[in-house]
Image 1 (cartoon, rainbow, N blue to C red):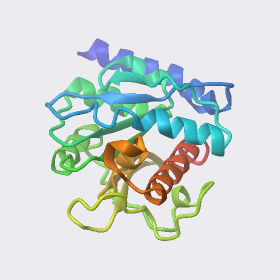
Image 2 (cartoon, helix red, strand yellow; image 1 turned 30 degrees about the vertical axis):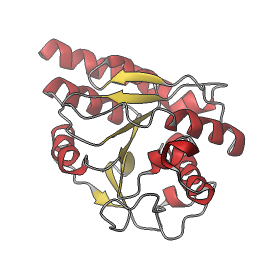
Image 3 (cartoon, rainbow, N blue to C red; image 1 turned 90 degrees about the vertical axis):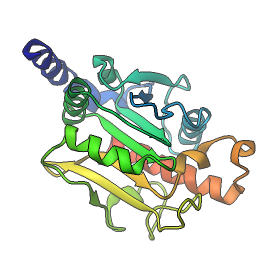
Length: 224
């Protein structure tokens, strides 16, 4: 166990510089996070590819359209400067998963968690394993993530009704840096999907994609 933890932190230190420079490279990849517990981590299969296409076209990124899948406990997570997580149900992080994810985030990585409806009651407890001393805090509308390439003066757009609550953006900060964004009661990922999947209007899909582009842009610039 000690050896594994030491290895994870050595990988984190090695990758810190690389992760912070990745956004300046000609091309890079993002990944979908695979986790245990039975939740459908694979939900919204067309979402990330559509977001990548939108970002490459509208905010000048050069992200590969090949979306990778990475296990939460796999050191290969350090290959990706941005990782997305979604689902409707249960999430379970082992101690090794939590340690690996923490090292990744402290090493310069960024995780966006989007509740696809039903994840909230599970993910909050699992994040305490990753950051036992850091609370999820709601981001104010003035936060930079809402004011990147696109302006969202009233915070997250409401894409799907769910429990008809207002959409909220929560984050975990470490030494002043936002390392993790959790979007709740918005369902951005559904808005990124092909139009025929959920039948969202073009306006709603545009709102979701623009907010997604802001998250990508923030993760590669302001988050560092």
